[in-house]
Image (cartoon, rainbow, N blue to C red; front, side, top):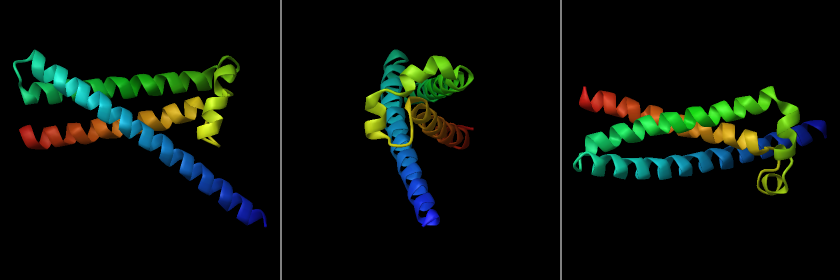
Length: 124
């Protein structure tokens, strides 16, 4: 009986991590499209300039999200009021705000790394 409960908890944890990762991919797609358009328009409709700005912007957004989630681990008493908001526990049963932020940051940095690798292999 104990193994069944542990398996159910693990399945819920994986489900929440997957939802948070998909949220991060959606944010990464939005940031990518926005920065690609801004970079392309500001440099005379150059797709390469847009890709470069999008890559750099994704790395910055992902790094800042990781910094905020790490700061919440360093100051747990200050982050406790934000962590127990009802909206996060309704959507994510096991994760709080900073767990979701960490998974989303990992997804954003993964997209930025894939874009960086693709740009390096295609344009160098």
